[in-house]
Image (cartoon, rainbow, N blue to C red; front, top):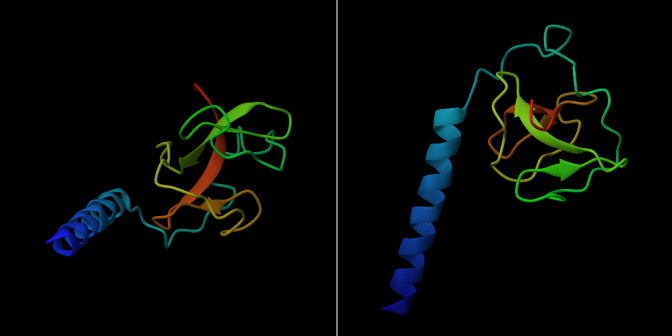
Length: 106
């Protein structure tokens, strides 16, 4: 009985995560170069501290807070970001979307 409950909970969590990624998935086939606004991305200094100021609010080496943002400006809170996956300064969130560091509160 407990084993069935664990499997059901795991299935529900997996389904929720999959739906979140499916509905927030953008067009990743575009080229992400000079057309993407670079403000905020060039002033963050590596290494980063994940969740330094709370969930989804990170810190750069100078202690400045930032968030990972998609090209559309949406804050990415789907999990760990793979740094430089799409090139220098362009990471990949757990849904596969390209993200850049953006200043917090903008």
